[in-house]
Image (cartoon, one colour):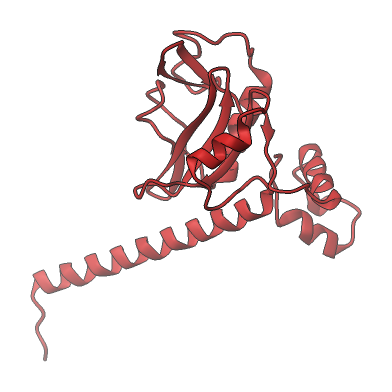
Length: 207
């Protein structure tokens, strides 16, 4: 008969829990990477200066996602604002992604299972919000409008995400997939070959 101390049992349970958490984090980040690579607007290892050059002459709301140069973050959104190109890091914690709450003025930020879902959310908000409300105090604290950045020399500037900056011209198939995703969430009910349905379900986002 072997006796195990309660301390050893607790340590074993803690190790198992931590191991499962690491495995879960790895799988979620890997899934996020797969989705990002399908977007066409994920630029990978791109510096802040390189992102600025890409966005410099773009319209307000043009954006891209790149790997973060900060060790504590995985990804960064680079976007064109009314005050010029800016960068906003994406936090990953407890299995969820959200915008960097240190930079943003909003105290409560929504969390998402994937980076693409996060971007999709703010694209939808940007498309339905009044883009002339840039200034101190614009937006609300509930996460119902574009995220206000600040402060800077011009006051508060809203983060608008409206147009992705693609690494290359996306394929017609991918653009059609996005259009279909905007029209329905029930791809399985469409009168399409299974192979085409599989292609549609590989990327279920609107952007």
